[in-house]
Amino acid sequence: MATRLELAERKLERLKNELVSAKSPMDGAPLGQPIVMNSAGKRIARQLKKYQERQFAKLEEIQEQEKRVEKLQWQERMKAQGKNPSGGLIKSVENLELWKQRVEHLEFVRDYNKKHKLPVNTPYYPDEKNGRDIWFYDAARLKDAKETVERLTALKEQSEQAASKMSALTRELIESGQVNQWKKQPIYYFVSGLRKVALEIDDNGDFQISKRYPARSEEDKQFIASLLETN
Image (cartoon, rainbow, N blue to C red; front, side, top):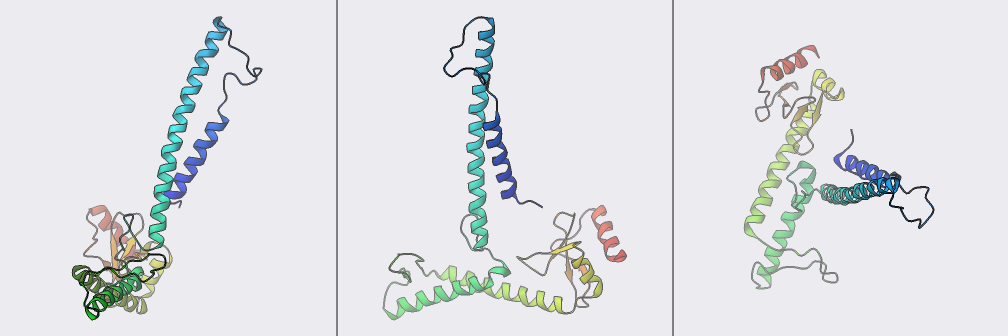
């Protein structure tokens, strides 16, 4: 399935092709030939005006689409770095090591400033040559980072334990693609075709409806029941 970025890039390419392939009423006319303002000439002038208006409108649409592509490319770059579009680190199991590094950085700056008798919030420059990656200490930020590491570690361990004892039925549902593990919080397996309905692996290695993402409609409940029974 194509991503939003891929779809946006395809649309941009289509718009550009439409711009260059549009035929002008003057195509085929000798270069520089004036329009004679008789009835035929007036018709060509009207057609030319509409053609130019369509081309200008297409150019504006292309510019807007280019902005959208740039925005989606930025989001993809941020995602590849484990960050949200605003640049904040996502609280995902995939980013556990990055959150551990954040704790280490914050503790380092705190201890460094104390050791050198500096104000605790004095910035530290690991890369003084290029002036990048400035580290600041903030008590609330450190507390949040430690709590995030603790929670993500627990989620990772819980997911690994569940994966090690899953039943044949559970494994079959995963391998068939009928459920998809959420990388951000891998204890949840979202059901394909349903919106925000997830399963979790219980102590016996079988799937159970998630309390956090349950099936709410009767139709979804029946679908889940049949999924777990027939497979």
